[in-house]
Length: 241
Ligand SMILES: Nc1ncnc2c1ncn2[C@@H]1O[C@H](COP(=O)(O)OP(=O)(O)O)[C@@H](O)[C@H]1O
Ligand SMILES: [Mg+2]
Image (tube, rainbow, N blue to C red):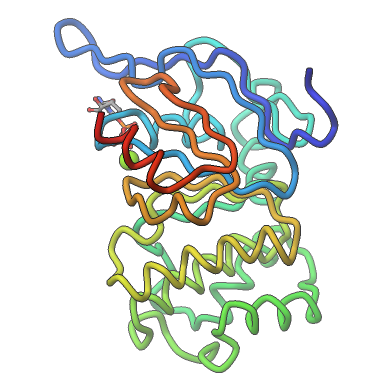
């Protein structure tokens, strides 16, 4: 049963890539629900279908079959222009590369979603968020003047600036060193604990297991394991098998 507390509901999603002999069922029948204020980690080897699944859930790609609703809105009911606006307001996105605008300061990058929406930022929220992310003293810097970890934290701030229903992050710490990578994982966890943020994180990094409420192990486009309150050793064993 779907409840209003399920922020994301996906039913039997399917998506193939390529055609002919190279056709791949990247997502091959996935259903899932993400309850509000939960932290879900999607684990799987390269090619398992993680990015395709996240793109479908964010409405960046359309499924061949199946449905996605975010905050009760069926993404297929929106045309492309309204989907872009919807995404900006309700879905925060973070990728492996921070994709900050290089000629704008960290502050301007953070405020970009508001500018694009012609809305006024909430100064109290921005202050709380940038302090929580540990970037409030770096806001006048350009992205090129920040460390990789700082850049990713600004990207995280930009994704959270408008308090999206769901934060979808695709290997956000893939390019960072161990310490900075852990910082990003800890921050994602704390956005759920402190701000009630619903987070979906895809990675092939088993360290993420220890931060998750739930782990979905993807294999060949299907959910091979769905584990609540995951135990690191147990899940690592499943990954190796
Ligand atoms: N644009 C594309 N064109 C053709 N094949 C693709 C494309 N994107 C992904 N694939 C294929 O779909 C499968 C799943 O890829 P992806 O979703 O990127 O997995 P992951 O993020 O887990 O590495 C892989 O076999 C990949 O080669
Ligand atoms: Mg990927």
